[in-house]
Image (cartoon, rainbow, N blue to C red; front, side, top):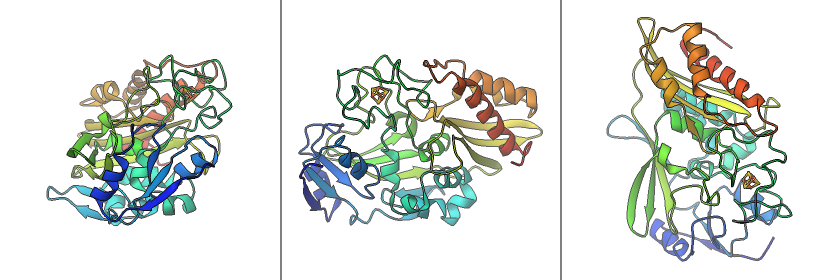
Length: 336
Ligand code: SF4
């Protein structure tokens, strides 16, 4: 690990002012915000992240969960994952979020990991974490070792010729299905970003993962008011039962009336280069009868654009089954 300066910020403007001295908000930036540190410190030990300065944001007071005027929820950037998962309003009104959070990492990590840190979680691609290997995300233009290499766990949706890494967060999948909004504060003021626009596809610049600009600080995330009559569930499939990242996961928010789907929001993880909304399947389900044939057709449709790599073709069927079963759980067609 290289030497770095440590600064404890006392106010949001102070933190933003320091971070704005960075030349870029992306991977090579020399100034980084740190809160729980569960991703950043890990990557610093591996020499993947080499900041010259860390700005500690733990004392900015961004750690409240509050009702918004419209009946939604405002989640501070520094709310710990365990606190969010166990918040009574989240457990009651946004079950999919609680289930997603509790399926991630370990209890110890969830106790320190924050909402904004989870939002910005870096990929678990093994080549990204190994500085001896070529990786366009870590070092633009160096190549992608995963294409034609070990790619069993990597993406089948949203890939490019430059990068096929998955977004590893469970929380992000739930936030996509809940149509959350990410709120930023930066040198030019505040911005509200629809969740589906916050993460970027890799394209030719896989080192750029979000819309964050130098100095931008995530202050909070808002959730829309819960729709009455909706049920939401999160299903995660992985190689082992705990402390493991998803091979495929599904976040489902549905409302059923008169035996038909009235409202459907679907997102998947473990298969996309960003949290992946399944809009075609949402449209196919809306208004359709709640039965096995409809669910299977929609789940198959959801994966129609999948482009597997040399080792992860199994994910197409796995993800199809994952989405179908999450829908069965949410509609009461299955209990486990
Ligand atoms: Fe790097 Fe992305 Fe290729 Fe992994 S998939 S080696 S993160 S460029």
